[in-house]
Length: 212
Image (cartoon, rainbow, N blue to C red; front, side, top):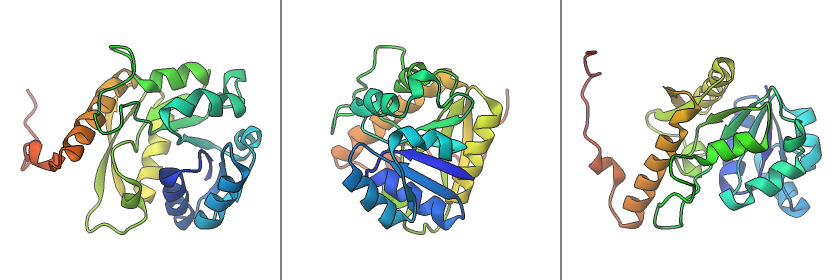
């Protein structure tokens, strides 16, 4: 599958590397040509310019700091509809560094902002909880990747891409659940910066709970 990545940071490069290893055709672009070339060389992806990503991708990953979302989507032509009809993966956490407090308005997720900036794109919230090393270092067991989105086909496509890099997709529902997923990220970040293992704060469930 052709995957276009908007962003050249650590997570973007790690996912580009993992998907390249899985046999996908990856294009990567950022605002700095130098960083784009470096990320492409490190991951095995094709270096592209931002306006060209849509033409070389069936799926797009938006992977930048939350404050850069508007600029990079605009540079990629998303407000003009270049990403319409494509799954758009959003792993963004709009939180204060080291604190975990969401910077979005109450009841609103950064994924909704992404959807507003990319009309017609099928936004899927996913891959926002684990550090980049999760996708470049073999894990002893697969991890669960919580995700949500409104378009069933887009959710299925993103789920298959999650499986390709060693994750197990767990779909919570539509994009109205994105705020909840982002709050979980804030919870994890807060505990981690307090030197507390977030897993120790979550009850272990031996088996699926019975349905009511």
